[in-house]
Length: 560
Image (tube, rainbow, N blue to C red; front, side, top):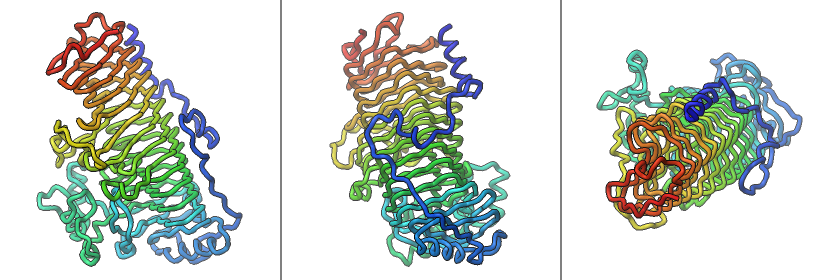
């Protein structure tokens, strides 16, 4: 009866009949309850000077290209000590916009900045994408080594991403696919992926590492520049950055990408991409420090709020972690993951607080991913008061064998690509490590899998805890190659198999564990490398509810 009441309350909370307290949070409240010391984020400040882009010949009819007007207005404000560049109501077609120091690009209500579909407007530049040093087309909005910049207001910024992105057939209905193919473009050899141009297809065929071509020759890259889709907002090596208010949507690749920057505030944004958009991430924070992310809404085609720090050797050579970040009061609708770390985390991620977030229909809720070869350390992550509903994959997922698959496999993906390899490899600088991660007050209704905690055989997932949480899912919690895992006051509801499976793990402590009887053993302990697994005997009717098999020793399990 008690579990039935818990499930009823959980459903009411997650469906909105009983709402958690998610009032808009103030800047001052951001630092409350944070578990680590960090400097307060330095805020932007601008003089009263205002220049409207119409003063420089801009026309908001959606046809006239306003590249020069934006450039002139930004340069005028910058050269006069800073201030606001105002974009009034209208549709303002333009090529790339380069932000300069002390400029606030302000979109009034009803303003739409629409970026050009002409690839010739976007020259190739040296940059970083997916954690690698590479060449891409310049971003529609870009800033490099500037200070005190902002994008504010109630308008909308549209990257015209459909002009750039390739699309997989499996992500569309038959009618949508037919319409897309009939619009032009070319198909791959199997007829399963649509590309806007032949150059885009050539770039895809030249890439063995996701979206970064193997070739380095600039002339050859020019021939396939259509494939080198930019992130929509690229802010690199900059300080004191504010994004406050606008809608950012329809990006060619990732939507917002702060890189190697500091003192960043991201708030009150509506970040959108079509759910089928390839690499349609919302916010990718990479090698940044001292950041606040709050009061935002995401509905995107890939990961929503994602932390990165470079990939493999390029990331390790950079050696810049993402650190000192507070994430509060965000809502995520469609996404591969609600809050995500990785997979490009070779420079490390540390000192992160995530709380008061709601995930509605994301493929996975809390997503941690890496693979051998990355290196890097992810540590000191505190996550609390997270509500999720309708999660088809895992509510919580740690995957150390990530190879690029989406959480819900697409037609061209194979689960074997990310199958666990039990080979024990030497620990080197290429070995990724995830440790000291605390999760509490996590409430989940309607998940496919409650939790999946998997480290590497040579580098266990260390000191991860889950406390005071209720997880309703078709499948329970699985822990593989974990060390120091703590489950305290965790309720697993609705599973069709075991509520908890532990394999080749050590130092696992389980207490206050609740589950529903479903005719199978509620707990399974497996693997000949499993040791020191402790349960609270008060949680079980008898020791027989803990099944020990497949190489595990009875001596590995203790009831206290």
